Image (cartoon, rainbow, N blue to C red; front, side, top):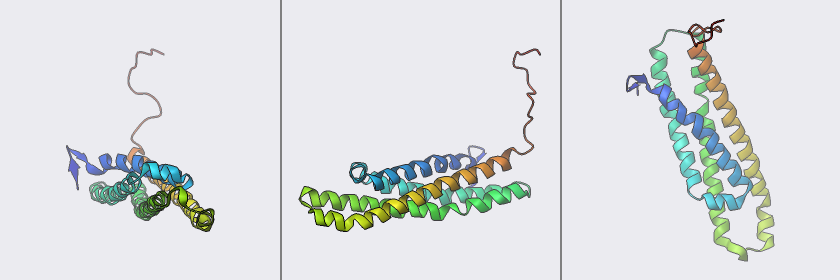
Length: 172
């Protein structure tokens, strides 16, 4: 994917990733910590994670196209290297979202008749899901931040002045 309406597709697609990864991370975390929330969110959780997962390779593919169409630059190379590391985090968000959704469905199917012993037996599994969800969600969000920061530096280095150059009505 190269251009969309005359703009590099990467510049447009990156906005999906910047919004979807933190949103999916938040939904996953809430669903893992609060099983009732996972039940209420329902199938939206894994679908959101699937869309997030699909948006990552689309965006990185468009980024690779853009990288080939800009001059050789260490900042661009660093941004591309960091961008390649997001897919495993997005995959982790998807897998854990599917697990949390499935566990929420299973808990709902058991209903209030589930015995206290069954709930306690599932406690270590639930605790592991919460911890893994927190780790993967935090890792994904931090990675998106690092990638975005490196992309902004690559795009804007030397492209602006710290002093205003236009006239904005202020006559100092």
